[in-house]
Amino acid sequence: MLRCVSPGEQNRSPSAPQSDVRDLYALDLPSHGETPVRSAATGPESLARLVIDFADGLGLDRFELNGHSWGAAVAILVAAHWPDRVDRLVLTSLGTARNALERLALTQAHHQMSLAMALWRPWLEMSRPWLALSRPAIEWFGAQPLVYRAIAGHVLRRLPADDAMARVGVQGFLSTDPLSALECAIGAGSPAFLSALETMTTPTLLVNADADAVMPPSGAHGLAARIRNVREARLDDCGHLPMIEQPEAYHRLVREFLTSTSLGPGSTESFGVRGSRSTPEAIQVADVPPVSRLKGDGTGGPTDARLAPA
Image 1 (cartoon, rainbow, N blue to C red):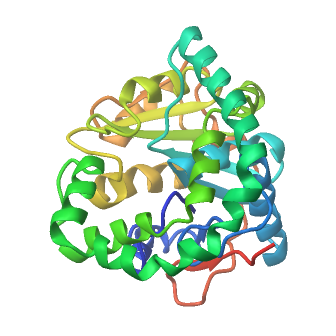
Image 2: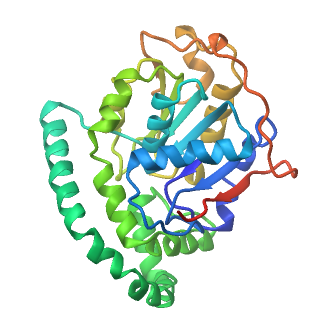
């Protein structure tokens, strides 16, 4: 599982319901969660390579990948560049440009920002030690109820009953290395994603939400139209974090996708979520080679993993 932002220890729970059918690794990308920053650039292609290096280090020849938001974008590159490694793909809360004009604007912005980053990166990197000194203040700021509820309210349809989940999540978001966050934002417009979508054939489940203010449903529909083997499911009355806001419905979707032996055009009702659909090129999961059970932490729960610095 590739997480966009790791909100801390309680983030183990969103993956745990799948632990009886798969051993899980919840991977924090560089500068997210407890994974340290990297001195090298963290573009989407380099992050995809890190995911493969992580799998190689664990001896995982084949695996299934679940990515959320920016993590889902990186997962697309992994599946496209290493199709013999990824058997099934779950993309959660991700969208793309909806038309040619938006794609042109996004691509041009990416090129301009990439050029500016190449010029300014050495200077921005020099500021990292000073920014690290401000982390205690940032954590204090993020712990204020007015602050974390306001930020979480923009991402979530409704705040979780566990107030600490919103607080720790926002603190983790605010503590993300600014330079890496900027590189992620620039990388989101990379033409590499469109190229990857043209070649990716991995059976894919795309889960989006009708009230997602970060990745609106229209962008998710545009993404689904560019994926060859895709199932799209929409969760109603839900925001950007369906695994937290509607965990039962979300995990049911993922579980049925991972365990189904056939997902033909007539099986949309098995998802049980209004708005789910199948493209004409329906997934035939039975044609996908079986996946060996991944080695986990031996407890039946997910393994939280962090990448070593470069």
